[in-house]
Length: 631
Image (cartoon, rainbow, N blue to C red; front, side, top):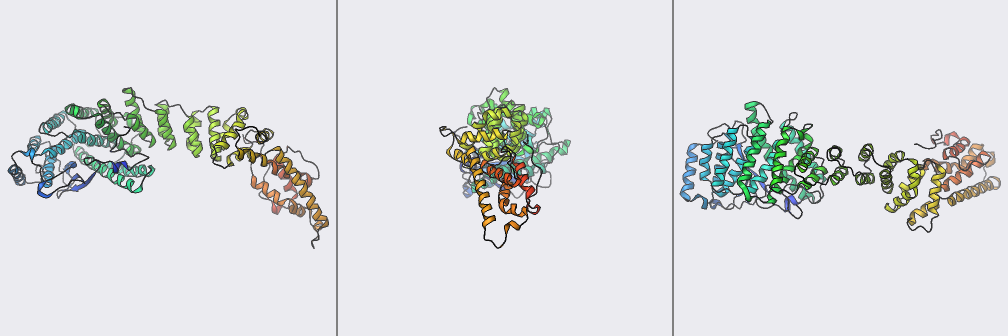
């Protein structure tokens, strides 16, 4: 639907479309009106009623029954006396013999619509036909919507014949707003199908729907005021649908104690909708079918978390499958758009249905992009559906973005599914470029050492190039001896530091490695340690302090000389120390031990030498030397 306005879908980038782009007849631009008998109506807020002139009425929703404590669906008085009906009929005919040229007042339209609802719900089709004869064009369109809505509650073939015949009579008398009727009934059918749960009550479903609507709007970007207005409008429409379902559910339970349809009833309902589409013919455009497809898909994104397991393969979903299939045949061209939307919000059952519809109608849907949307929002169930049922296999992009964001759950899911070594290396690069050290620590042990060795220089260069100025991720790899061999890890860092002619190396990376991780930095550290020892010995022998340092216990003398270095090494952590710090530590350990130490000794071993000569009260949770590598 590129370039077209949408009535029901809340776009992630501009949820305000629900508010800004509503047309006067838009099914969401409505307000609730309840008459004195409790009948629920949804009336366009731009009515423009002008007293007895009856101008500009736009009733958007009108329910078949009052929301009262008694059962209105079987009442024969329809909450109105016969005399009142006769007076209204006489008044209408007195005003103008040609009823189609004279619009009814708002009061008369509400009254007539309420009477029609009662007659239709009570299956008094003869009386309902009499009300059709009294209706003006706008009221006829309201009656068309009311009658079409009732098809999703058909249970017998007799009811089917009665309702389809009624629709034909209403159209024959002048009803022609097939667009509004199709949009509205598509939304209702979706709600009916979604609410037919065997494990959850309608009241529970209402609560879940409200929560999901709140979550969906919260995930959208845009003006908070527009989001609030959009939420109110969608909530009103959904409330209407749920009240309608509640009334019919109570009526059905009085007959058979069921809140779900049989396959025979589903066939009746879809047959009735097909008859309506045949009757509408060319009056419905491709855009109408596209918007109706939107309207049918939208509730399922709200109800998805309340579905029974395997809902998409059950009878309850058959209605939606049939409805959406007919809308696609009519010209709906937004299957892929709704498919991506469902994937983004984790509506797994709707994703399954749309996959089936796309396969049956040979339509292309972007499964790989859908996997990207689902993974971005951490919708694991939807990801599993797209891979197992949609055969999605392009893991690299979603894995890369999950590593950049630090989404461990998604990264683990992809790794468990099976990723190539190169994909893991790219994800590792993305994680260290974004300083997601937790992801990097998870990925490192899962990449073979020979692969890391071959790509080590490119990984460090690419990570620095993609970073936002911080090299914390690069430092994490080096400190944790990412090649598994201290000599190899230090050699890689030194090679990059000395590569002055390699334009692919970021200047800040080269400067960082040269200062802290190069062989030159190690030599500087050794030299610094030697100078420090000379200066300390001068103070020890020639100092004018009233405290004679040579008379102190050796451990305290060691603490005075090297406690700050010890603490700095402890704070650095990791398996490897920066070369400059390591050079100082090698020199300190040699002086304290009274003998030269191996320059390639592990950091833990060198720190242990200092700890052995320091007072125990100064030690910071001494631990056994770490293993050479955590692999």
